[in-house]
Image 1 (cartoon, helix red, strand yellow):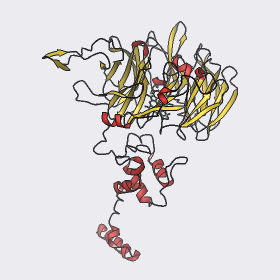
Image 2: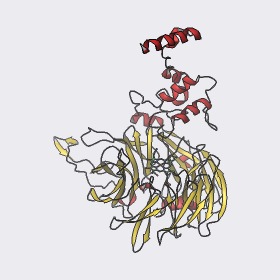
Image 3: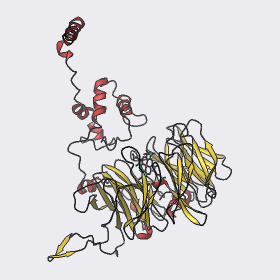
Image 4: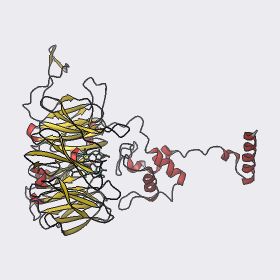
Length: 528
Ligand code: DHE
């Protein structure tokens, strides 16, 4: 009876408002795929895999809130070619488009070895330029600063703190740029899978290639001859020579091929002449040797037949697997590169995140690291303490720095910080380790300095109300450079002893900065 009354009321409302009865039905969804083809495909690609504009795949949009996506479609992105569509599209159409780009492309877009090879471009003549900087400054004390705000890279003289050069990068670089051993070339990886080889001495791009559609990071071999990319999409690692010519891709999957995985990260283990790769969805760590004399891999499966006879996989450029109980997200090496310290992904309830130590020689887990929260091991640093070497690593959830003895694998101390941070740095020549709290809404503006001898916080540096994060030292450790991580941000230089600000260069969200010397010498205070 009540339902009938409601229906009658609704019908009356329709008549009273003069609505077309058809409109009383649920409003038809604007056809997002057609809207995309008309308005977006020219820049973002018919398959949403990117073009002049970035890829618009769920993997690429993981860090973009839907409300922000709607705003970008409506208003565009300043300082980019992304125009606003508020005048062209209705609010409902913008909503429909924004919702649709978060849906997976079906079937999943492919990126084959042929696609990788076809994507490669090189700058004519760049490979034959003289081996001498065209600028005047110490090439070993150069800073490469990635500015995420407008997708540029700045090169800064680490003695005078002056800008040497600024150039446009690929969209959304992520992870540390990787240098050749002589410090001349740097490789950048973008989230959309582009690798750029750049000649720092001649200020030019040498070559570019698209290794995947969604990439985690890249590594450069200690001998400067190989580059490896870790991909989420497709689920592969890709190996290139130093000129970014594809050598091969390797499917990230279990040995029986039954389960595929995104790749968490790849790092170079120079003393072992190998790349070490962690898988995100399968409990395996791979070691891929770039030593032509590497022992063959006997993994129990027949890979190849020669005159009817089984032979082992060559040890050179093929994965040697260590099977674990749980997958690794992010990892770090001990100084001898025998052990990998890996973070295990938190469980769905947010609990249980921890870390484990894997011995790469005997190829098994040798210890659990009882760290609460979510250790960000890739940002860890090591230093001597109390007759041993410790690892200090920020905790993405905890608002603390975890310190672990690298001989016993036991926690030494948990140092409180005002809030969870992402990055941590030190230098052999300074008594302090510097940590940010950039994940904390209230303490994102604070850097905490920790005394490496007493493992206690001894000072803070603030940039009130603004995000202050990611530190890197000069070659001699006398100055620490930090980022005001805002669109109208800055690179701020502090005297590492007096903690006074020395200089400030305006920059557009400088997400990371990398000192050539500290990187190529693998300083214990920086990421590798
Ligand atoms: Fe990163 C490095 C993973 C989100 C900025 N980040 C790395 C590395 C890994 C990693 C494995 C080491 C790669 C290397 O240097 O070769 N990052 C992850 C994540 O899993 C996470 C949490 C989620 C994701 O979406 O990928 C993540 N990272 C971010 C960000 O949101 C940051 C803050 C901003 C951004 O630009 O993406 C960010 N990550 C960085 C930076 C480095 C990095 C600046 C290099 C640090 C260094 O000093 O070496």
